[in-house]
Length: 174
Image (cartoon, rainbow, N blue to C red; front, side):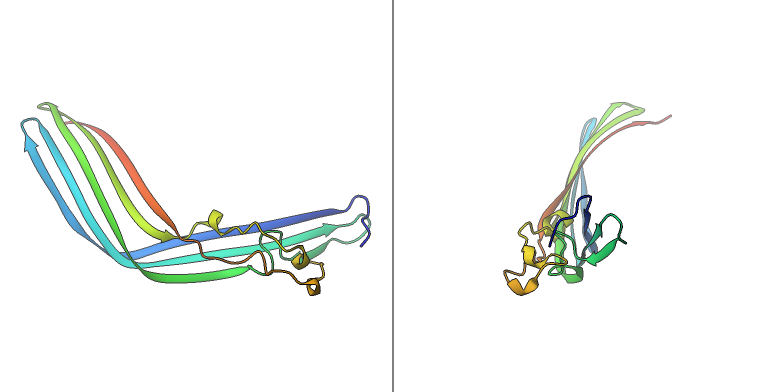
């Protein structure tokens, strides 16, 4: 096809991921005291079902001077081979652990410093769903009959996620 000066092609690609965990969370919290210091130790385990919903969508708008814009399904990295919403479910265990150090500076002042982490494996992340290998024969308006691989593909990447927190507190009592 001939290129017309002033032609604009705008491609939109959209990738989304939503993870939802529902489960039973049980564990132990223990406290140990030494004079004006104490340590809180937290250990928990949640067991439940994780639902991962992924969405890939794309479109193109072609604007030629003097003509009406043309809208087509499929973008560059969100093409006809990987468009759609998919839902995946399975069972997971999610451990959590933490420790907090408490120091009673005075009878009415307490300082607290803590750290905790939660680990959840096999979550879906939108950035990991992007397949950068593209078959130009599958672009909107191209000739798919020329063949080639069905790329970009839809894969469910599963990444491990560590959630870490640090907390600090000062407590005054009167």
